[in-house]
Image 1 (cartoon, rainbow, N blue to C red):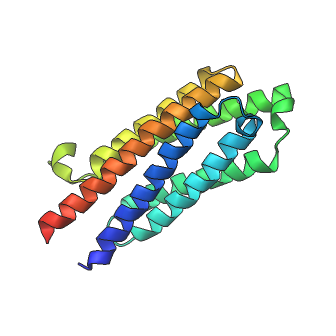
Image 2 (image 1 turned 45 degrees about the horizontal axis):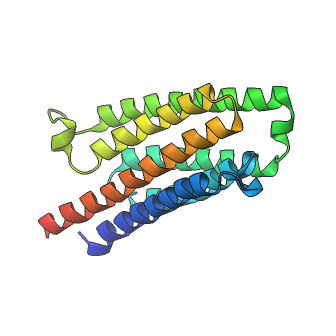
Length: 193
C-alpha cells in the first residue's frame, strides 16, 4: 500500500477537525458579532465542512467503498445546505419559511445520523465488535450519533442563540473526534509498516 494513500486521508481528517474546532470556538468567542448571526454562520460552516468532507471522501475511495458512499452523501448534503443558507440570507425573516427549513433540517439530520449508524454497523467486518474493526467504525458511529444529536439540538433550539450553542458544541466535539480519527489512522498505518 502506498504511504500517501493512508497519510492523505489522515491529513484531510486532521484539517477538517481543526476547522471544526476553530469554528466551534469562534462561535463561542464571537457570539455577539453580527457576522455570526442568522444563516451566515451555519451556511459558512456547512459549505466549508462539506468541501472538507468531499475531499476526505475522494481520498478514501479505494480503501473503503461503503465509507466513501456515506462520506460523499454527507458532504454533498452539507454543501447543499450551506449553499441554500448563504444563497437565502433573509430566509430567517420569514417565520413560516424559517420554521419549515429548521424543522426539515432537524428531521433530516436525525434521520441521516440514524441511517448512517445503521450503514456503519452493517458494513463492519462480520463477527467483530466495533473495537475490533479498526480505526474506521468507532469514529464513524460517533460521527453519526453527533449528527443525530445536532438535529435534535436544531429542532429543540427555538432561538438563534440556542441553535448557535448546539452548532458550537457539535463543532468542538466533532473536531476532537476528527483529530482523534486522524491519529488512529496514522497510528494504525505505523503498525502496518
